[in-house]
Structures are given as structure tokens and as C-alpha cells.
Picture 1 (cartoon, rainbow, N blue to C red):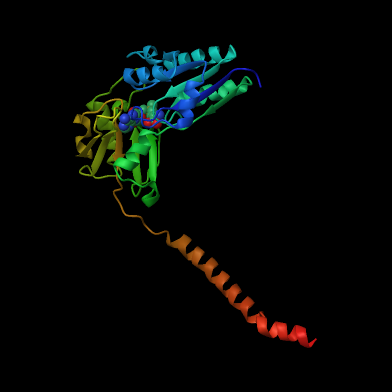
Picture 2 (cartoon, rainbow, N blue to C red):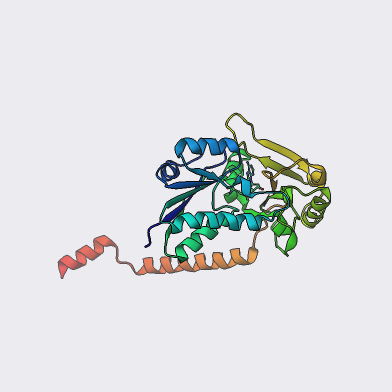
Length: 285
Ligand SMILES: C[S@@+](CC[C@H](N)C(=O)[O-])C[C@H]1O[C@@H](n2cnc3c(N)ncnc32)[C@H](O)[C@@H]1O
């Protein structure tokens, strides 16, 4: 392995309380720290942990493709890795959840022979499951990036939860906007209406970024989405619209397997010599 390494850590969503002790330790022991976090306060907090924190915030601009921004981030991180430094980059939430640059920089650094790995953080998804009381194990939960859901033919299951990420910029093909409007969201509503009634209640969710803030949890009918207030932090949850339907064919196959197992167990038991008799036979021989 070459000298030079990179660790991508997650700071979590709520300032100060969501970071893991291990991620904090990587930050404190780094040569240089990059910050892809949601606000200036979080950057100041990182600066208390390390004297050289370099913000990615100036790389973002309305009208500039985020693909360009992501490539600039990757280049900045790799320059320092190639200089043989211990590089740490702190992204908000979980750095591997709906985030391109963290995965890409790890892939590129490894391809060049450097040590690279990711430490998880508390994602907005984790906050959502906690605050909205949604257990993905109950009926299942589908995650889609809102625009990708619009641009491609996707199959969704209305008996499970549907979570749409980046709904505030739904329908934007430029990757350069900070918001799209009601007309774009109406297209999303029309798509969803193929699976859900227009009166179906959906939830707009924004977890608190700062400890003194409250989460925003807005319940509204699907039809009201075009006029709803949302921003870059908004995640949309569509609860199930239908009950789970039994797969009778699979259940019948499984029942047949179980019946065969029980039959085999029963006939094995028939030929088994009871322990007492066996011992008696051994002794008499
Ligand atoms: C580029 S993704 C980054 C997600 C981040 N890596 C995470 O773990 O939460 C941005 C999207 O995450 C969701 N998101 C980010 N912050 C959020 C928050 N405070 N509350 C709810 N959802 C949030 C929104 O859907 C937003 O458009």
C-alpha cells in the first residue's frame, strides 16, 4: 500500500449528537479534513476537532451542474491523498446514502493503491424510521431518488412504503437547480396516481439539523403536492395504499415441503429403537 489514505465519515443529521466515536477519532487524527456538510455551524463544530477543515460549500452554485461539483470534490480529496496525507472527509448524514462523491473517491483511491474506506453515519433515513415510526420490516420499504423514479420505468409496490428522496428537485434534468416547481411535481403526482388515489395521505419529512430545532412532519393528500412547501432537505414518504396479498402458489409449495419433512420425520421415528430397548439389546449380546 502507498502512503496516503482516505476515510469518509458521516456526521449524522443532528449537529453534535449523531457522530460515532470512531468517526470523531478519524477526524481528530487526520492530516486534512474536508467537509461536505449541510451548514456553516456544522463546519465550525468540525473546526473545533481539527485546525484544517476545508469546506466543499463554495463548490455548489445554482446553475452549476452538481456533477461538476462532485468531480471537483473528488479531485481535491485525491490531490491530498496522492501527497501521502491521511485525508478524512466528513459528509452529513450517512456518507454512503444517496451520495455519489464518497463512493467514487473510495473506488478511485483504491484503484491507485491507497487505503480507503467509509465509516457509517446516522442518515436522514434513520431519523425518518425513528420519528415516523416506520419499521421497514413490517410491510417493506422502497427507496427511490424522486427524479430517477420519474425518468425511468420503475415498478413500485403500493403494499409497501415508498420513500422519495430529493423530492424538492423532482424532475430536474440539469442537476443544476436548487428547486423545481409545482408543474414538475404535478408530473410526479400523475405518475403516483397510477398506484395511489389522489386523496392518499403522504408525508413530507425534514429531520432537525440543529439540536434546538424540531423536525417538520407534514401530512397532506397526494393531490396537494404541487403547492406544498419543500426544500433540498425534504424527503417524501408514501404509506402503503393496499394490504399485503398472500402468494397462494408459494404458500402451497412451502406447505408441501413442510408436509414432506413431517412425513419423513414420522417414518424415521417409526424405525428408531427406543433408547431403553437398545441398551437392553446391547447388554444381552
Ligand atoms: C444527497 S441526499 C444525502 C442524504 C444523506 N447522505 C443522508 O444520509 O441523509 C439529500 C437528500 O437526503 C434527504 N435529506 C437530507 N437531509 C434531510 C433531513 N434533514 N431530513 C429529511 N431528509 C433529508 C432529502 O431527501 C434530500 O433531498
